[in-house]
Every structure is written in structure tokens, then in C-alpha cells.
Amino acid sequence: IEQPTFPKITEMCVKMIRRVNDEEGIKKLVNETFQKLWFTPTPHNDKEAMTRKILNITDVVAACRDSGYDWFEQLLQNLLKSEEDASYKPVKKACTQLVDNLVEHILKYEESLSDSDNKGVNSGRLVACITTLFLFSKIRPQLMVKHAMTMQPYLTTKCSTQNDFMVICNVAKILELVVPLMEHPSETFLATIEEDLMKLIIKYGMTVVQHCVSCLGAVVNKVTQNYKFVWACFNRYYGALSKLKSQHQEDPNSTILTANKPALLRSLFTVGALCRHFDFDQEDFKGNSKVNIKDKVLELLMYFTKHSDEEVQTKAIIGLGFAFIQHPSLMFEQEVKTLYNSILSDKNCSVNLKIQVLKNLQTYLQEEDTRMQQADRDWKKVAKQEDLKEMGDISSGMSSSIMQLYLKQVLEAFFHTQSSVRHFALNVIALTLNQGLIHPVQCVPYLIAMGTDPEPSMRNKADQQLVEIDKKYAGFIHMKAVAGMKMSYQVQQ
Image (cartoon, rainbow, N blue to C red; front, side, top):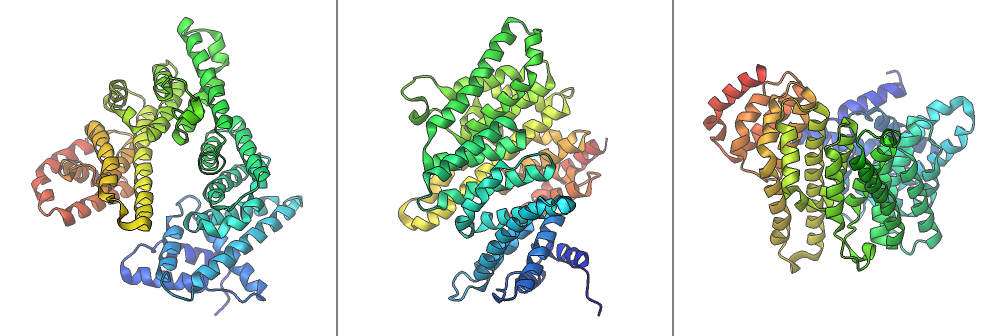
């Protein structure tokens, strides 16, 4: 048989790996294939085999850039879990080898990037390597601890292309997971990270700001406790917003505001992002001041949701969504309920605003889910000392009450003519059902209707939810079948 070419192998791997969550038999085959292909230790002297393996993995990761990396995480978790109790751990050993060699490759690409001929190819390779390292860090951050110092300088990458931004974002995500695990990191190293992140937050766009604030959150909250540094940054943007609000109140048509629009958009987004990761009402930040920061932030952001410019409204809603992750109880405020529900139910309201409100709810539910899983893992470590049920119930009780407030309007978004609105509404409902936050019977007719959606991905997702409901609650679907038929007709109309 002729030797298959590299692109051919990558294509085969991509097709196989997508079946990692298939039925048990196929899942087992996929796991075994990739264990042999990638996760078996390579003899130390066989550099060529190691390079082939690295190129293959990073090619597959690069090929899946748009479809997401859940399969890789799933695969790695399955394989590491299977050898948890074994005395010999080949997968763990292979992972250590892969991570060490990926770091070596990154340094090599870095050198060759100065040679301009291969720039495009190698910068794509560099991104794929760093993305792969992030995926390893997500499942086993300990593997990257010894390489944290090597990764830090990449935060100062000069940004001119999409790839450069991806390098910065992935390095920030790696450091966020790894720095808190380092034993006695040097103060210089930590101070450099903080300053690099701050420069990026001040200079670049939304995606970079989001990942850098998140990384800063992990470094400051878990390691350096350098609250003054963050407080100064928060005040800079909060102060700018207050000033812009006063100017707008004096004269809504002032030319100063038009000139300051980029600053306004950046401040709305950054204040929200900082509030997501830091609780500024703690004494560490505001000292013994009696001012309630979260209420002040809410008031400021709410003011700009009534602005005449849609772009400003959208950024203010994004900022609110961030703040609600730190303080979910704000979603019970009357003005917030009115804002969210009127945007979702108003037929004439802009599609962008509808989507943003749905995205806010989606992100909140995803964060809650992550928090619950983390609490579950932490609890398993301390075992029977606490009543976990009680601990989880408080948090899920809050999510459940919040979703009851907005459920009707989210379900009604299924009838929107724009598929993107329906897509986010379905995501929110799926997350709500998976976390068991509402009684599923009220969603059944809507899900039946979504099963007639013109887009296959939506039909499949809605059907999947119905299958799950039918497993747990036999008879519910029959009970709501007629209502489902009527709603299907509404969707088609």
C-alpha cells in the first residue's frame, strides 16, 4: 500500500476523532486507536517519531479550529481516567513527553519566524502548538508548570495578524491555569505577568481583554493579592464612564460624546469584564468605604442600555452580563427583569440586542455549571466533612429562580425569523434542562416545534433534548404532542 500523505492522515484522524462520544463500541475503538497513535510513550532516542507525532496532533488540532476541541478534552480525559488506579501510567508518560516536545517545537518555530520565507506556515504551526498546549493544560495543568516561565514572554507578541492574537489569548489561558499551581514563583516573574496583562487590557480588543482579565483574576486572586493594581485599573475605566454619563446627561447630542465613543465602548466592556473576575465590594479593594460598588456599576451600565446608539447599548448589555456572573442576585432587580424581558419579547427590537441577552444567560449558566463541577471535585477531596447537597442546592436554587424569571421569553424566541436568535434560545433551554433547573414539561411543545426547524443542527439538538426527557419522564411527550403540533405550525409560519 502506498504510504498515505500527511494531509490524508490528518483527514482520517479528524473523521475518527469526531466519534469519541459515540456508542460504547465505537468510543472504545476510537480511544484505543488514538492511544496507540498519540498516547503511547516514544523511545527517547527516536526524535523522528516524536516529530511525526507532534506534527500529526497539531495538524488535527488546526483542522478542528472552527468546530471546537471538545473531542480532544474528552479523549484525553477518557484515557487518563482509564489508568487512574494503575501502577504503570503510559498515557501520563506520553502526555509529559508530548508537552515537553511541543514547547521545544514552539521555540524552534519562534526562531524560524524571523526567517521571512516560511512566515505564514510557521505562524500557523505556532498557533496550533500553543492551542494544543492549552488543551493539555485544561485537563492536566500540572504538566505545564515547569514551562510557565517559557510561555510568559509570548504575552508581549507584537500583534499584526489573527494568528498573533490567537497566540496571546492561548498563552493567557495557559498561564491562568498554571500559575496558581507553581510553588514559590519569583516576584519578578509575577510582576511581569501582571504588567504584560495590563498593557494588553489597555491596548487591544474584546477577545484579548476578556482572556487577559480572566488570567489577571487567577494571578491576583489566587497568588499575588495585588489588589491595589487592579483597583487602579478599575477606577480608571469606572471614572471614565461616570464622566461620560455626566456629559451625556448635560447634552445627549454633544460632539464630545461622538468623539469619545471608542473610549465609551471600551470602558463599558472592561468595567464589566473586571467585575466578572473581581468582587470590588471586598475590603481588599475599596478599603473601609461604605459605597456599594456593584450597585454603582449596575446603575452606570443600565444608564447606557437606554442610549440611542445600538452599539453602545450592546456593549452595556455585555458589561451587565459579566457583572451578573459575579453577582447573580442583580438579575432579580426590577429594572434588569424589565430590560431583559422587553428586549426578548419586543418584536421590533434589534436582533443584536436579543442575541446578546440570550448570550448573557448562556454564559451565566455555563459558568454556574463549571462552578458546580468544581465544587463537586473539591468536595470529593474533602469527602464527607460537608453536606454537599446543601452547598450545591443554594447555588442551583439561585439559577433555578433566575431561569423561571426569563423562561417564557426565551422559549418564545424559538419563533423568531432569524436562525441565530433561535440558536441561542435553544442553547439556553438545553443548558437549563441539563442542569435540572426547571420542570421539563413546559418546554416539550417548544422542543417539538424546534424539531421542525429548517436547520439540521437545531433539529438534532431539539430532538436530543426530547429523547433525554422521554427517558426520564415517560408520557410527557404524548401529553404535549398536540400543543407541539400547533407550535410547529407557528414556527413554519
